[in-house]
Image (tube, rainbow, N blue to C red; front, side, top):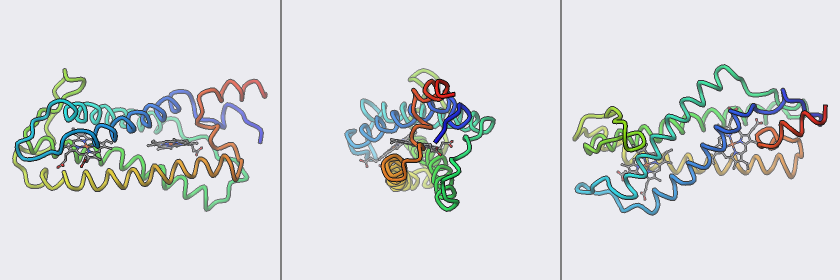
Length: 188
Ligand code: HEM
Ligand code: HEM
């Protein structure tokens, strides 16, 4: 297919995408290695890192969505069937929804434990639920469940990217790759 700069994601969109992916990788690694959280657990060490990275993820995704709202996704290749086009779009919006909902649930849980939530360990962030709140407590369980749902969806998404690359060979993956804009420009 013939690429033009208009058919690839712009540089900030690509940067947001890969920064989110990297932070998510770190966040799951932290979640699975940090100590189990119980009633008397203190938010220190790896748990504190989990809260910090989580706050950065949700703020990054909010900024990314703002950027996305003024810079729509580039048009898909003509060859892509309508059904796949729709499936991709729904998956992407569901990913965005979970990228916001999952951290907010964890944050509400942290607030219900009366844990301080900060940005870069410096700027205090507002509590999302009152200390001792039963709803905030229950959201901790949902946080863990939906973190798995998010992971499953990311798995589907990565599988789809590889399917496009190696089976359909329609250049979808290149739309999100860093070096692509230069290559696209040189083909013009
Ligand atoms: C996309 C971002 C996030 C992901 C993928 C994520 C993932 C996870 C996972 C997988 C667990 C379960 C760990 C285990 O059971 O071994 C967990 C627990 C937890 N996370 Fe997150 N987290 C995210 C953001 C946050 C944020 C922003 C906060 C708070 C500011 C937070 C606070 C917590 C707390 C308090 C727990 C323990 C919950 C409980 O066991 O009741 N998380 N997280
Ligand atoms: C690990 C966490 C990841 C998350 C949360 C994520 C999320 C997203 C989201 C929300 C979009 C939609 C962009 C938009 O239109 O605004 C997107 C697009 C895309 N992602 Fe990911 N992604 C992840 C990892 C990956 C990986 C590892 C690959 C490659 C193997 C990949 C390949 C792509 C491609 C090619 C697109 C563009 C699809 C198109 O052209 O329509 N993503 N991703």
